[in-house]
Amino acid sequence: MKLFYTPNSPYTRIARVAIIELNLCVGVARRSDRIETQKVIARDPNSDLLNYNPTGKVPTLATDDGFIYKYEYEKTT
Image (cartoon, rainbow, N blue to C red; front, side):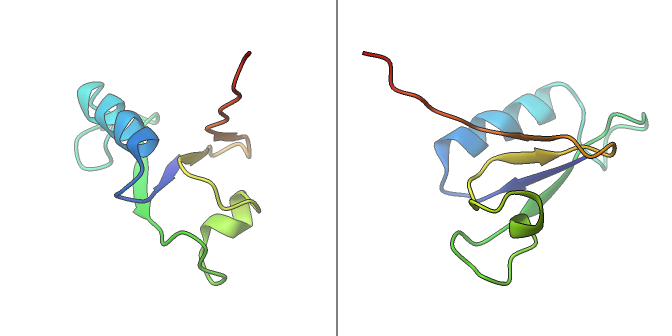
């Protein structure tokens, strides 16, 4: 799995802290559920993120079996 992130996103920080706390980092985990993190630049037309999430929003988690999870915020009134 691969997590696409930007360092300034508060939502990405939450996802990265969870990955670290659960020992799912590539360098730490030796299981098949490890997660590689890839820093991207927002609104970069050449970013690898756009191959997985055309809207370019972060965090985006791309799994090995093709599923993509992205942060979606909807304001409820």
